[in-house]
Image (cartoon, rainbow, N blue to C red; front, side, top):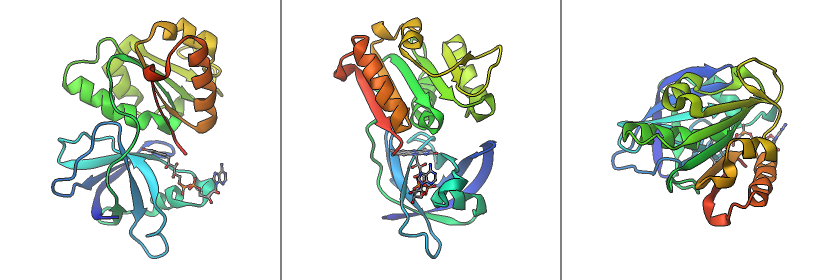
Length: 223
Ligand SMILES: Cc1cc2nc3c(=O)[nH]c(=O)nc-3n(C[C@H](O)[C@H](O)[C@H](O)COP(=O)(O)OP(=O)(O)OC[C@H]3O[C@@H](n4cnc5c(N)ncnc54)[C@H](O)[C@@H]3O)c2cc1C
């Protein structure tokens, strides 16, 4: 862990997701979609490194992270609730499999949205959002991270599906082959996939069954 970064702002973006802004070490760089390892710089936690994705862009003067807390794990993300402005993290270099490789569909489950936030933000700044869609799976509407931002970016190309809540606005259930077909995934150019391992496994086999090749799929799971 080569870097020490200091928390400048912490805010809730949903009931269990925090948005953290920190300073950025001089010369530190990454590509949108990449992650790093963070450890909370407190006794007993410095060796507990966990991967998190940058939701800021490389050219920004600060780093941003968007982190879902899991109190039941009694691990690092639970400790984030006790963090204050001025506290520090230890941070490693940037790494990760998700990198923008051209027009296509983004599919995210829960905190799996984070690499796509950075990529969509980047496309928005470059005025290149057209031709992309996002399918975002969550349990309930209150779990949808950055809903308003994404609506503003993608409009009707933003499709939510909720597994534990029925609403007039969003699809209900889990993403399956029919849902993928309905959203034209069989003819997608690239498919970017990020979410919990069981979702990734199921969707990868559905996408291959629809005729997508390995080269078209850019995927990273959250474990
Ligand atoms: C490349 C990458 C990028 C990521 N980016 C982000 C991001 O930007 N934002 C984000 O929110 N997340 C992200 N994640 C996921 C994030 O790293 C994990 O949520 C985080 O490491 C969880 O840490 P934790 O210490 O709270 O819990 P864990 O390390 O998952 O667990 C701590 C302990 O709890 C136990 N445990 C595990 N699962 C359960 C369970 N279901 N119930 C009870 N106990 C359990 C474990 O055995 C372990 O001992 C990313 C993951 C990867 C791989």
